[in-house]
Picture 1 (cartoon, rainbow, N blue to C red):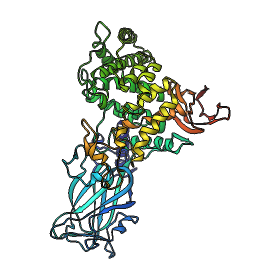
Picture 2 (picture 1 turned 60 degrees about the horizontal axis):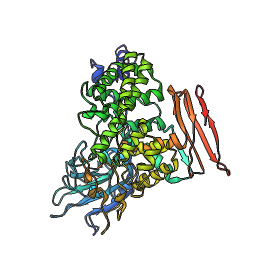
Picture 3 (picture 1 turned 180 degrees about the horizontal axis):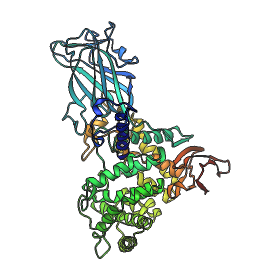
Picture 4 (picture 1 turned 90 degrees about the vertical axis):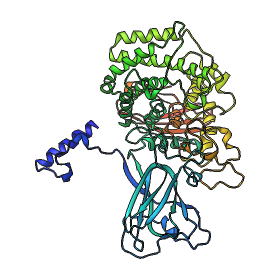
Length: 586
């Protein structure tokens, strides 16, 4: 925002000096009160008509005209436009499919031949076809965070753009008995950051390629003005949820200001002694985010601005260690929703996160030359390692215990993570389960988990990854991109728990993007060793793959890597590194 304000100030100076012209509205305007957007807009034509309420052909006419390219401009022409008409009792409507989940709204252009105004329509956005068929209050359906079910009045010979949500499908119904309306065009107004996919991952397994790209796209949609976690529901900045999102951004987009902007927003929204988002673990995720962001981007100037808060939160955390080395954190004690009823697992996870947070804190304090706080971090680690909690049968706890070094990754993998397939996995902490399996050397087990768990969402028609998912939901499940057939289970309406029951469940959640970052790091083998990607270790683990190639964005340019498995099982690697990047080939 500061950079944008400076640019706007310069333009205003140029404008009033006669060197440039801006609209008069900017005259005498405080630049800080003018907010620009990081998003652009593209309008998308529907790909198909999923459903029509009219089985007779008497009430809905020329629906196929909506599948033609649109101009966005009303005119005075006559033609065979989409026409919808109600009788005395029935309100008619259609469902349109835009082919893939998007973030944005809907644009409707009317034509001549209508009354003035043209009439009222009801709009229902859906991440599944079934969601467009429900009412607010039905099976968890809400208008929380984003309006997805509402009525609007359309102008005649005009254009109306409405909505700010996540959706793939939209249902439009004409409101009122005996009403009639002619519509020239309906398009989706897709709003997103216009940024290139600099990172890539391609292998001989198309399912893994699709999973990698779906995770990347899921995060891209959530890169709004700030880094959100969900584009339908949960359009908020959650510090913990940002961690897998940021790791995906590092792997796909490289530097993007949405990350530091959102980290600062979280910091300023919850001044100490508050926990970020009122969750103690989320304050710890903020420390780990700072560590990883600096490691990848090497922006010391930004890191230095975090010194005061960093020292404060580390000292605050140190107060929550008892004489036996146990964490005693207050506030909401939370890892993720599926583990939220297992108190022993939560303790194990928080104990592990305390260790990781102080390790990160010690590293950051060394960089910032804060020896007193660094020493406090080292003493806290020593105390915390005296207490090693039980894994409590939890894959979330096992993953964090392994990552923190409180137990060996091999123990976590053999006793918990490698058991029961992908049962008890979660979309958020599934990322850390994959990391722990890799730490144990079980790369193939992790790859199999990715295929079975995240691949199952794609099998149900997902084009982005979900807030939560349980593999048991696959039994007799209908796809989300079709009307639910008789005898099949409506996954969206039937499942989900805690704060995301039924249709409240978000089907585009950035915290579920972990496989994208994981495949880049552990299969493509990109490991940042020196701050700012000055040194990168390439350590591929192909498992049952025959070949893999891809790219990784660094502050100095794009690293290109290619691996091929040879007949003797060895891996042949080729790479092209940008100037300023040292490569260690393992």
